Image (tube, rainbow, N blue to C red; front, side):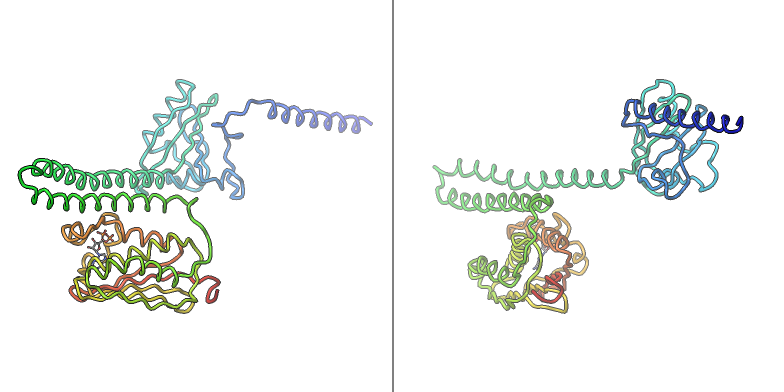
Length: 372
Ligand code: ADP
């Protein structure tokens, strides 16, 4: 009987403890920067162990108590035992600040030798400090690429704008004294303004390509696109006495964005015409090869030196600055080609010989593998 009473009392005590804990947990205000438990479970299946966010808990004397897998990886901590102190002075400093002020403290640190950039936030909780570590390496790199792109684009825009200003001033001065010279400069003014407008168009195309909401996912007849784009450039080819030939199959379908594929084809044909001297040839071929659609644009033009072949797809890269600018080049065309190709799961390659010509080959996966 006493045993039964004791067992009932124990059970009642256990239930009331659980109820109390659950109530306390439910009633506690939610603090987004806090994690529910500061004790890190080493069970590999535990949510904290599987998180990308690193979590390390320090004692009031700043010694590590526990760390999840992401934190151990980032801070190169041993799997089984924790060191007496963290190596990073910056992390210790924010931990100390959080402990002294009771306010969260943040910093960004570079971790070597992994070359990772980590955003760290230390939160004090009574006699312990939790440091959250977010790996922001890719974010920082993307930001740097964007910033560099803006610097390059501004620099590229400055050149034609300065040219237009100088020419406009010259036309203004020459218009009364030397009308023939004024006409010549006005023609140059037109060429410069066309170059500027081309550069702005390429920049707009690039920024549109980087916005995934503009990407339509449909069946694209790549032969039809190539024919249409070649027709649009026929006049340019004729003006430069270049024979433009098109040999396309009309049953080559890919999945993707027709406008972007049009942009890709247009850039390749446009380059082939601009970098081929008069009486040369430009051939556009659309074919199939196994499960791939093939687009080839071949010219008998200037060719590209071997040492520049791997760089021509970089933004703003030009083999011969003067020749490219003279032909209205922006240095962006092939980077657009590469971007569109890769967004469609394909690959672009180049075969070229100086003085002989170039062939750009784009390989894209066929819609439904081999058929329409
Ligand atoms: P651009 O607007 O200057 O033509 P692109 O990105 O289209 O810029 O091309 C990069 C560079 O590659 C060009 O400046 C040019 O030097 C070279 N190039 C591109 N296509 C050809 C080609 N078909 N024949 C020879 N050189 C080419």
